[in-house]
Image 1 (tube, rainbow, N blue to C red):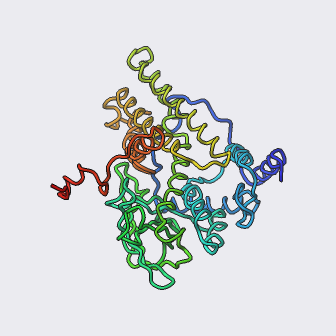
Image 2 (spheres, helix red, strand yellow):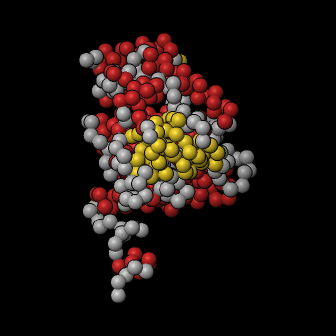
Image 3 (cartoon, rainbow, N blue to C red):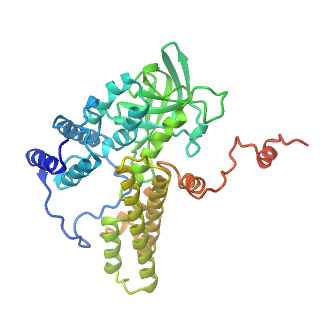
Amino acid sequence: MTSVDEFRAEVTEFLEANAERKEAEKKFVWGEGSDKVAMFEERDRDAELVMLKESCTWRAKRFDAGLGWITGPTEFGGRELSSAHQRVYDSLEAKYRVPNQGFFTIGLGMVAPTILAHGSDEAKEQYLEAMYRADIVGCQLFSEPGAGSDLASLQMKAERDGDEWVLTGQKVWTSGAHYSDIGEVIARTDPGLPKHKGLTGFIVDMRAPGVEIRPLRQMTGGASFNEVFFTEVKVPDSHRLGEVNNGWNVALTTLMNERAAIGAGGGGGGGQLLTRVIEMVRAFGLSQDPLVRQGLADLIISSKVQAYNNQRAMDKIRKGELPGPEMSGAKLAGTQNMLKMGDFVSKVLGPKMVADSGEWGTYAWSQLVVGTPGARIAGGSDEVMRNIIGERVLGLPKDPGIDSKSPFNELKTGTQKT
């Protein structure tokens, strides 16, 4: 196997030949450069497609150089190297200017691992190498208008028709659906079974007849999410993920990888955002205010604790262990820290954050505040994360659900025996 030192030299040679080195990062100075602060990057869709093309070109160049799927199996274009090799590549690429790779976070971080774990041989052959080379882009279609946090309550149906399945229903809050080629979808295949038992996963062609994608305008002003309608969309059985009616386990594979990606993303107010907040306090002459200092100290401590917990969780993943409920804790900590940061900044800025006076570093923070609620839902709501932690980490009893047999639910439904 290629040693880490040999690999480092290989990666450095590739990057030097194909990318431009970044300038040394300048120390942040309040009032200089862009004051943009946002939870979600809002893009014009035409400009977004140009960015996507550049990103796919870079991804293909990486793949063709043997650096597209460093830890993946060789039969699908991977190198079968260790996670240490992956960390070397990530740390080196961060020193160079390369196109935005965020377009592939969902496809490669969530959908591809699920195909690898549950897909048919035909699906693996058709999609894995193409996804890692960015010949195709993937999205995830789980949530529905009536089944967001309670995913098992989804109603989108899939009916078998010979060697095909016919999908009908609606999905919502689908990031990147408008530029994706394929999507991972969970549908109900047996309404007669308990809600967790009658689900099946599929890979669907996002450009197939019967697929309609509509943008959803957010209160941030952007439209990075979509609602997707399926009207008798045909999917071959070879594109089924896992066994029929075992879609809940397929979904769990995706969700655990999703929370690993979100929870380890360094959010929660760390890094540059925290530096901006500290400098804001100084710029507004509040560094000696005891209440402001207390709030800032709490924010810094929470961010540090989150970072250490994230590191512990990621070390577990790098050892080859599956992400578990600790990723729910990481995701929850990240969103709670963003909420805490928004509250703190709101108190410091007051009306400056809701009335655009043109003053640098004030109104720009409104984008973070109005974007935070979306982060508290995406990847599992805060309430769901708390339930996971309570049940799987603390061992607390499971909350009664709509299909639970309990005196309370029997009273609600009028089925209690007298």
